[in-house]
Length: 121
Image (cartoon, rainbow, N blue to C red; front, side, top):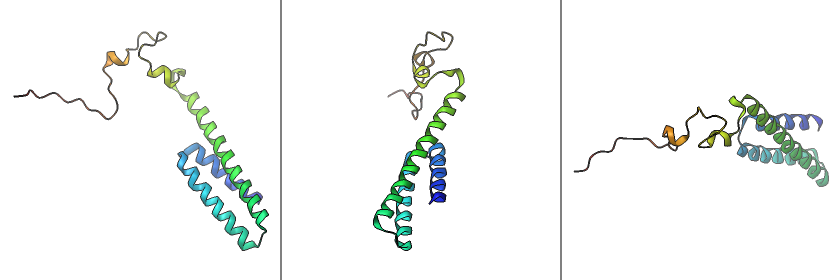
């Protein structure tokens, strides 16, 4: 059981650090199925199967949150300028007057291309 907790914890940290949220749902389902099947094949009681499955799920989810938190902290430290996304998305930042606003640079929404208009007629 200890080895299973360590393996699930390491997987949770990896998923939190590298993968998106749907991956944790899939892995949680896999942990539940493997835990229940292992308990049935070993002949464990229903209470013991339930408790072991619950411990594994809680370990997975907790370690996922730890991995996610570590990722957020490392990305915040490596961000250039020390600003947040809100600072970079604002139109006129008084702290950085040399940087033109989004309106001044003519930035458009991602995915849209600018094409010259054809004259009608």
